[in-house]
Length: 332
Ligand SMILES: [Zn+2]
Image 1 (cartoon, rainbow, N blue to C red):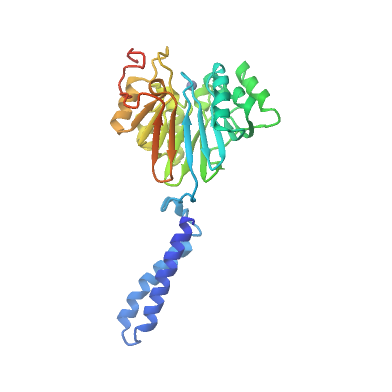
Image 2 (cartoon, rainbow, N blue to C red):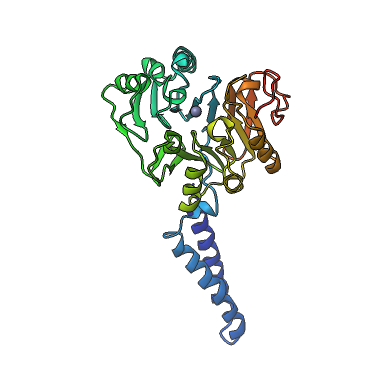
């Protein structure tokens, strides 16, 4: 049942009760009757407003019985790859590097995902688009979301060629799509940029009372654009931007998102010094429980619409907010 229906039923109950009392209070007890006018008018007002106001903000839409949502943050080293499964629907967000093609192919096969409802290339850098050809070698894709239709790299050309007849859809901020009982909204990019990281598709997925924010490699300027757009950013789980680089996850952005959980997709011993100590420190300040693919391998998050549960492949007790990287070095 939708939250607006619940509110309408409550209003109808108040209305009915008020009218019943109104009828039973004798005419001369005017003051008693007058008091009933307040709940009467309030319930009529709230009832009518449910047709015009998005009540899901007040009461989250409950998920249907038997529904489930899983987000797999697949360990592709210094790259990104997330598989979202909901009620038989599937979305792949990025595919890791070209070298991860076989891994992504095998992962989809293992999960029995032969049809992707959405394949999302957050931006054209190889560590995001590279393995998508491998995914498309196994599974078909109904909708392909990407911020650009062309990019001068073999990895991108392979992605286009494996898409076959499926055209690239360049989404606009505010566009919404259904994935099973979940819904996701495109938040960015808002503005054009010469820096591919800042063309990253940023999307927020809602499932019942839980939400997930996928940020690609968006840096400060795209984060700021999205904040200024007024979009809802608050999310239960944040896929941390740009592998935990200090060029992303500004304090002001994190304060808007206020994640309970953060996931960093990052390679052990990478040459970039990701994740940066300052981002880890900001996540620590927010009290976000943080997971990292370099320390914990593939991370699976399951939501029942009210809360989320995480399962890691290894090192469940790892000190993920430590500036020490998985191979014992210190990150910069
Ligand atoms: Zn990247």
